[in-house]
Length: 488
Ligand code: 5AD
Ligand code: SF4
Image 1 (cartoon, rainbow, N blue to C red):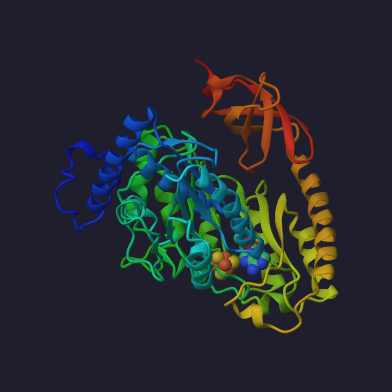
Image 2 (cartoon, helix red, strand yellow; image 1 turned 120 degrees about the vertical axis):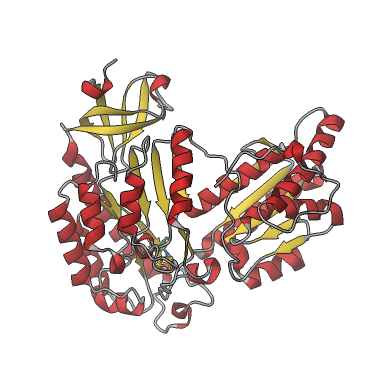
């Protein structure tokens, strides 16, 4: 796992090491020299901005990039008008791609004013060949293009760009092992994402992820546990285990292990008080996992269980490998075993061939599964996926009209559900002083909902008990309860 590496001890005049991660530390040291020269000449540190445009995995990769930038000596900024801007892209839906081209237009202006500026693009969108071709031919001002499999190489790529003076493109089709022991800089000191697997083997017919993130690869349990132990020593109390399909974790390892067993091992780590995970594919959600959740005092009573559609016919065309009835039976079992569980989901509207009857089945599942909240998406046609060439693509206006009805249903059910904890005392992890009223702090419940209550900054990062006094739709107002564990 990551051990502090002293860059001053690295001989930057020697040949670069072949082995990882030593090679990357060598290039970090090289780039740091350049940063120091910049500081001497301009009297300030160069500023770097990372724009995170995707999911939790994407955010975690951004933390790794931030760690490398920090080692090189860059000062972090949220302004895109910086000396180094990195767009960590997403490509799940077409409009995510369009946004990137929009941002590039803007940042090109900044670069004209500051020719030393560096612009890098990475993430899922870069794994698409036609995107990289377009960038190479029409966006020559972009300095570095890399993908999802070599995030750890940022320093080497930046060095190469500075040495050669030309655009550097390094996108790998396949992963080449998992590089451990690199720095990363967390956004919050008290909580962190932890990758447990990369890639996906499911090939849902609408989804581009298996093509851009590659086949599923699990990290070894000992590496994961070591990382979490280190995080706990650094003061992290909540971790989110991340994978495209956490339920199939460990099946590809030399010594296979189930996700439930990993969870039980994570639970043993002192200092970790809360465990979350995402995402769970319904077809792989085991009874063993539900049992492990039930018996745990640390695993949050929250499950994100994407349904995608309520129609068995559409689910089949989506290659989801469960029926409406099987999904609802799973929800029943979850509610029976863990009555206070909060369920959330992802739903796609307008998959090719979706009829009004199919859509009604989706509304029915929302009603019966009683989700606390749901992410709803308009189906987006992704080139290269089987669904993109299916007949009966749903017209945009039909999609939009269904989307609005779905949203209304999701919000109605969500409001009813989120009110159900009023009057109870719940554990809350305090995240920040309330942005609108500084006599309040804001924290998160097990269910992921927010609660605001009187308190001050000294509570940030602490788990406290809060009585939920009032539900305001999708958040609560509360007051702190001083119990036995909070005294002294
Ligand atoms: N169109 C719309 N939504 C999609 N998702 C994945 N691919 C597509 C697509 N082509 C949604 C799914 C998934 C979430 C992360 O994004 O609901 O669970
Ligand atoms: Fe995409 Fe399906 Fe894999 Fe999720 S499980 S990443 S929706 S292919």
